Picture 1: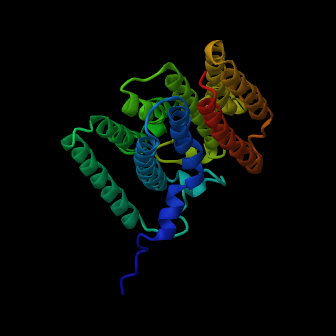
Picture 2 (picture 1 turned 30 degrees about the vertical axis):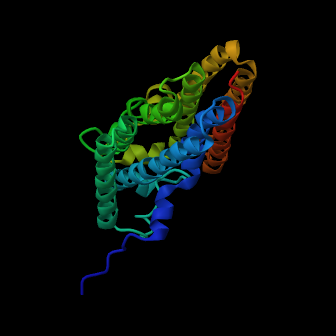
Picture 3 (picture 1 turned 180 degrees about the vertical axis):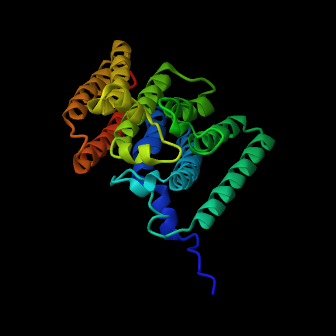
Length: 310
């Protein structure tokens, strides 16, 4: 008898979505530029909500499903997820727990990809070119991060800058770009902070997996692994601190025109650097606790920047 393969299930989908990470990063980035449109612009609230809903659905499909599906498949085949000790890291665990099979996960990735490509074609046909561009960039982020021939997640700094950053930045400026036909300075500022903050906590996310990533075939040489290999064990924190320093520079820039917004970002930037330095990189529970705080801070900063736009 041929053993039954685990099928695509609602439980598997829920695990894949990793909804906490999606809400505290991508959804937060949407809210950060939607809130100013509601409170400071004469655009119909129903129109804003409609656009925000489309962006939210796109985020769930590209970030929640496609990115995590491809990442799970690649990290399963390379072996890194098998050795991951992380609580939040190490993939969705749908394969390790046999909630889904490799075949069903592959089928899901292909199905979502085809659907998104069809939606891109529909957007182009309906002359919604901005939605088409956003969808294509979302697909690019998912594909380039994990799949060959790109597999940018397996190279230091390239993965976050060429896959994660453009998708988060474009998502952050999407609502004003669509509704105002221009991108105000505050939208660029909010989107930049939210995108780079996301990169910072992803660097913390990679710390528990650094030993597992070295065992992968091919080696998953994340920025964390590269930094530790070059500069020693404590340098595993360096990529996160580097990106938080970028946040600090952005906070100073923002403070010149939006003092409350800049000060709020600055306070959390300083506290986050302190927490990163203090964090024990050999204690998975301590890293997980710190990462959860950074996810919470990401949401707080996004809302804070969305409220204080002047």
